[in-house]
Amino acid sequence: MTDNPRKKKPAEPPEAEPRTPAQPEPESAKAEPAETGTLEEQLANAKEDAQKYLGNWQRAEADFQNYKRRVEQERSESRRFASAALIINVLPIIDDLERALGSLDARLAGLTWFEGIVLIHRKLLALLDSAGVTPIQTEGQQFDPSIHEAVTHVDGEDGKVLTEVQRGYKLHDRVLRPAMVVVGKGETKEEKEDTKEEKEADSPEGGEKKEEGGESGKKEEGENGGTDYP
Image (tube, rainbow, N blue to C red; front, side, top):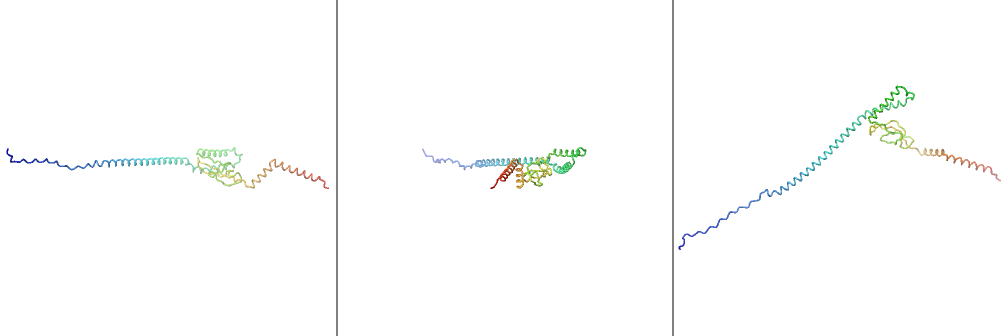
């Protein structure tokens, strides 16, 4: 067999497939953890802001309620004491009526004009009472500078109101006019000693002692007078 003049070409190795470069991971996959952290922070911040807004709203609501309560109280006080100025101007008229009635003779009590004045005085007092005006208690009470005004101090029980010079009045719990009074200042030492001596002299025991002393003195004098000396 003759050799084939045409030599077979060696088979070419198969071409290697071209390597494709590694594709980078998508950025969205890398950003997911960061975005998750950001969302959590945003949620925490939103909750914190919500608590802050809630606290501010609650404080504003409380302030508004306090304001409404204060306004209502001021209105109520204004209504209660709206007539205070008028009543203060009426009080001197009542004082004059009381002085006039006190200076009149009791024998005039049956006269018509006298009874008319008394009726006017009673109506004025009833009007004051309906408005919430009450007289201040004075005689026999302990002196209170918030409702009493001391005109003078005289001998008497210390700190006690002895006499009322001018009547005082209160409107509800507010003093319209303090009462003018005379206050006791207590007894002095000399007065206490004099009072003690007077009490001892007036007591029956003191008188008996004096009588016994007088009788014993008389007996001694009689005995001495009847004795004969050598």
